[in-house]
Structure formats: structure tokens, C-alpha cells
Image 1 (cartoon, one colour):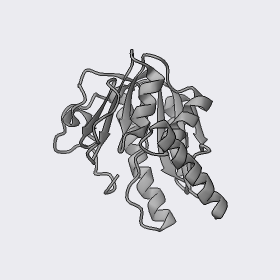
Image 2 (cartoon, one colour):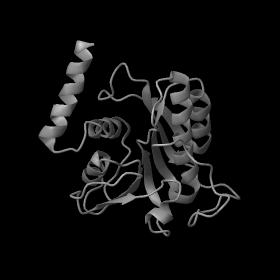
Image 3 (tube, one colour):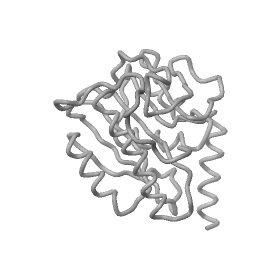
Image 4 (cartoon, helix red, strand yellow):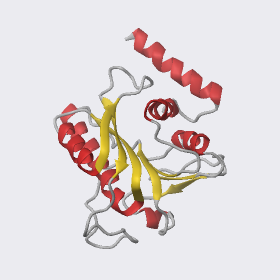
Length: 219
């Protein structure tokens, strides 16, 4: 346990040294270094973006010609780079949160996580709900050939989620960054090469009655 705390402290110290808002920045850096998610000039939608460390990484990776939009239920402290925008709102309704409706993204990332209960099964299925939210946004917001990164807590439903992602992407793999705590059950599902919206899948406009079901509280 002491060794794990030391690793945790290492990434926290590195985040402070490099000006990132949280140690979670290194998870996305390691995902991109291994899987090559971002390209210069990409447009990225970041779900559950508070406190903004993933937006900091996205800003660096897409460069001044690219842009990122982040959504979170919590307010985001000002001071992010000029090519990223943090919006307070519900990820189920990007337009309502302030994302321009005519945008199509090259990458969707999600570090969303619901409030945990301490029950491994309950927390797993709650995390599955927020993954489903991110996955369901793809037909409306992700371009063909684009990529998806989303966090889930491991459990019995993960193989089916992975199979569903593989059905819609050319490649899908689970990946656990070094910056994740070894004892944590969090893992990232990475879909690359989105095959595009299928017949009957329409772009979501502003939220209306009869929309998607609510996600678990507190993502």
C-alpha cells in the first residue's frame, strides 16, 4: 500500500510541476502516447471535464489549429488554454450545454464517473451507465473514422460493452494507464475508426421530453 501511495504522490507531484490541474492528465497522455488518439488540428469533445486537466492535454495534443469543448455538471475554473472551452451542463445534451450544433468531432473522450457507493457491482453498473451515454453520442457527434475514449470500472458487463464498441469501430481495446492506481478497477475502453451513424440514427438537438434516460447521479 505504501508503494501505491508513493506512485500516486509521484503523479500528483508531476501534475503540480507541469501545471496540470490534476494527476488525471497523465492518464490521457499515456493513452495518446500508446494509442495515437489525437492529431494536430483535431476537434475533441471531452465529457466530464472537471477540473480541466484533460482539456489541458487536449489543447497541447491538437495544437493551435485544433480545438476542444468540455462539458461537466461542475463549474470549471477559468484559465484554460485559448483553444479549449469548458461548459457547465449535462453531457446528455451538448447543444443545451453550449456546444455548437453544427460541429462534428474527431475524438470524444470521457473521464466521467458517477458517485461511488463502495459496492463493486453497483459502482461497475453505474460506470457502465455513463459509458453508454458517451457511446450513444457517437452517431450524432463523432465523424466516421473518429475515436472514442471512455472510462469504466471493471465488472461483469464490461465484455458486452467492449463487444458493442467493436461492432461500431474498426478496433476496440481496453487499456489501463500507468498513472491509474494499480488497486483501482478503472480501465479505459478505446474505440478507433468509427464506422459512422447507421440508418435511423439522428443528430440530437436541444433536449426534449422523451430523450435519453438519466445517468447515475454525480458524474
